Length: 190
Ligand code: B4P
Image 1: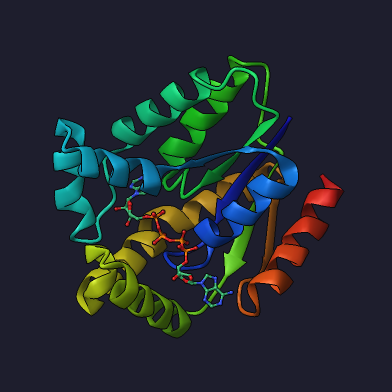
Image 2 (image 1 turned 60 degrees about the vertical axis):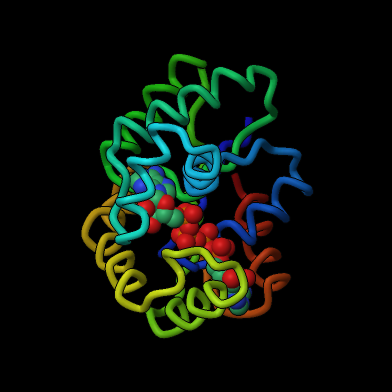
């Protein structure tokens, strides 16, 4: 099984690259951001709670996203593998993911981190905010909060995978196809 963690700050291009990766490798795409936005759109209780936090640029509680991922793993028993996009975002989520995969006699193949500087991130997210109307992309203060959350809670997740020799970082600036090709080169080494 190919189980890939796509990592990087908000706006690094995880969602963009995931779309291309699922086509090429026939993996199941698990984006916690997409699942949460779908809960919000459906007006569920979980969506209502998540909306308040997401609109401030804060992370949703670990137990909520871990339960969501656990359900998705259970509902795809015949998957060739998974792309974890935007998850894990904390060390507790990374530990829980290892435990969930172990119960399925599987494990993470590797983490690929997209490196993009803060100025470029802000530019991309504000641009998307104008086109998509995503409230967390429309406001520079919220974008700043997301980057702060990333630096304090999510960056340590990279060390978790470095300690397991499963971490590779690549340049996330360039054309979408150039970055996709760099990711493919890393996957070929797994
Ligand atoms: P996410 O939905 O995961 O989104 P993201 O980090 O904003 O974006 P991503 O990196 O996928 O960027 P994209 O490809 O779209 O998170 C949203 C919120 O959900 C979080 O803030 C948090 O509140 C909550 N959440 C989600 N998961 C959670 C978890 N596990 N635990 C707790 N809370 C969680 O690209 C962005 C833009 O850049 C696009 O407009 C794209 O067109 C552009 N772009 C992409 N590649 C480019 C390139 N090479 N050059 C130029 N532009 C590019």
